[in-house]
Amino acid sequence: MQLPEPQKEHQWLQRLVGDWTYEHECHMGPDQPPMKSSGRQSIKPLGGFWILMDMIGSTPDGHDAQSIIQLGYDPKKQQFVGTFIASMMDNMWLYAGTLDESGKILTLDSEGPSFVEEGATGRYQDIIEMVDDNQFVFRSQFWGPDGQWVPFMRGMNQRVTEPTSDAMQTLTPHIVCADAIAAIDFYQRAFNATEVMKLVGPTGKLVHAAVKIGQSMLMLAEELPDFGSLGPKSLKGSPVVLHLVVPDVDAAIAQAVAAGAIVTMPAADMFWGDRYGQIVDPYGHRWSIATRQRKLTPAEVQVAFQQTYAQPPAQ
Image (cartoon, rainbow, N blue to C red; front, side):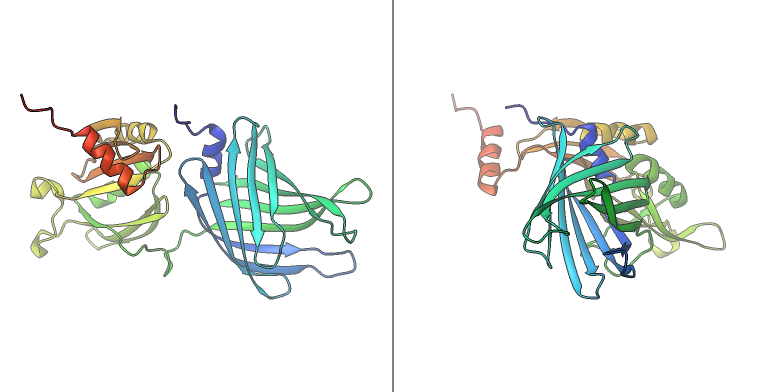
């Protein structure tokens, strides 16, 4: 069976991946004042096909709340699909959605308990509108008795670009580069890195910086030979390989090469279920880049390994 490839609709969803803050305003009726809520949202990729949106904050009336949205795209149905669940609801909402011609607005249709008629089912829409790579609007509306859509919630979501206490993973690479300021530019062009912070010393050399690649942080600094801090080129190599997981390994390697990397291992399908390749960047750091094609258990990986490296029978 040939494994599917992510389509442009899947790639659109990947634009939402990251950490966000939100400010929502909810209107529950013409005779009621608007209620505001705020919180944080972490959107993570699941392979190259799905995203998981985990929102933690407060409800408009001040109670703690958590909600989880799962979104993907079904090529057979030619529509976006997903679910919404929340800690303050006992109903699972099912999504069926479409992207407008501008490629900026995703409208997700759903049905659930009616806001206006007890015991009835109502029609709803959640709408995601991309403003730019660092902002999107999330709004909700229901189908009113007069046959018109009635907006009741609107929220602005802002990407988190400042370093926070939870921005670091348990293990974060800290690399040394000759001409580290130029290295930041390379990682932005090669891996779509976002600069989080940068400290430049009085000599114009980089003292410390942090960039974010996907969901992970990478710290880097300029070489300091007097303190024994040297990059791979000064050391004539590196025993370390930085591993990067992406939706499309071939496209990622091509992008890195266009930015100045050199391929040391072309992408190929591997026995453990990944399509995998390696590059070396202009500063001597080695990178492995992979896309998960099929998920295998440890036992299945062991069998595949033995089959791949089976010795020919003795003559």
